[in-house]
Image (cartoon, rainbow, N blue to C red; front, side):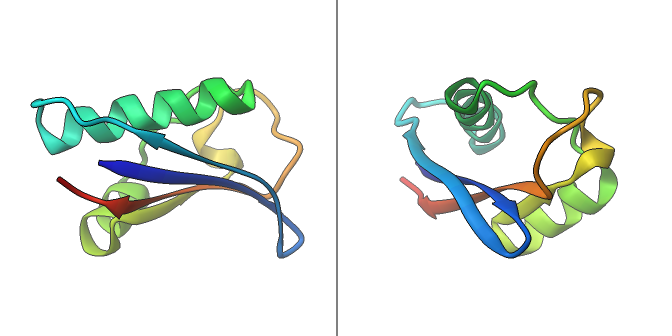
Length: 87
């Protein structure tokens, strides 16, 4: 699995990274680990999955984490993750 993580502000992508997890684990566990790796790369806390995030991700393999998903204040509009390749 490859996941693309991007930070957006005012309609512009500020940063992006691609992380990989080719373990034999479940899709859910791989997504969680990839999100953690993206956040580590960007020096962010790992956001909370809210119900809208879960529904959006289940339907499109992509979701946006806005301020509501973070405990600390973020200096951008949202963090977006998207699966770009599944094994």
